[in-house]
Amino acid sequence: MKSILKLIVAGLIAVAAAGLAFALQNETIIEWWIPVTACALPAIPAGYMLRRPFCDIIVNSNRWLGGAAAAFFIFTLLIGAFYTINYYGADENNPRQLNAKVTEKITSEHYRTRRVSRNRTVRGEKYNTYSVNVTMPDGRNKILPVSIGQYSRLHAGDNVTLTTCDGLFGVPVIKEKSFKLKHRR
Image (tube, rainbow, N blue to C red; front, side):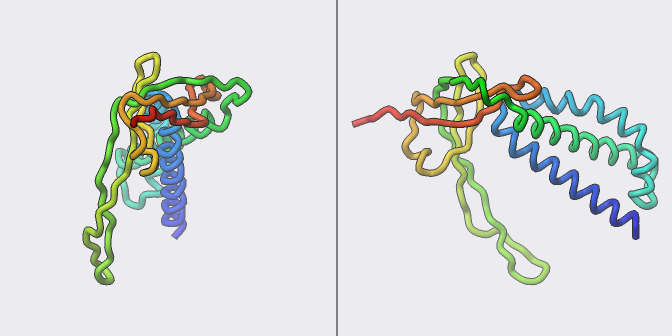
């Protein structure tokens, strides 16, 4: 019973850390592979060292499965901590303005799930999410989610003013987005 409770708590912590990392990655100006690599490098040896406690949590598992579970758990904790500490530890006393240009408008189709009966769900209604691809002055690209109202008013070539601050680890963080639209008549 204790091992099942430990497994549930570890799973909830890992999901919360991964959710924070996923949400704050949209507000951070960095290539995705840099923090993934920086967090995976210490997670793999730490997972090897902590494989025995995770073998006890995952009932009847071998040492490879315990090591992989420990490495995954530590990786999600590290990546969640990286994005959270960098975002909330940002120096807001020194904001900078970045003028970026909209290069592309992106629409993504998704489907909701609909529950049909007790143990059956099917694909439900379609909905769209909207985002824009912006190019920074230094050449980096960032995909920013926007509302449908902003999406309909934006065009390729419009300017986006991003208020950024340096995060605690030196990675720039977007604190505010301002869309300046060209008025077409």
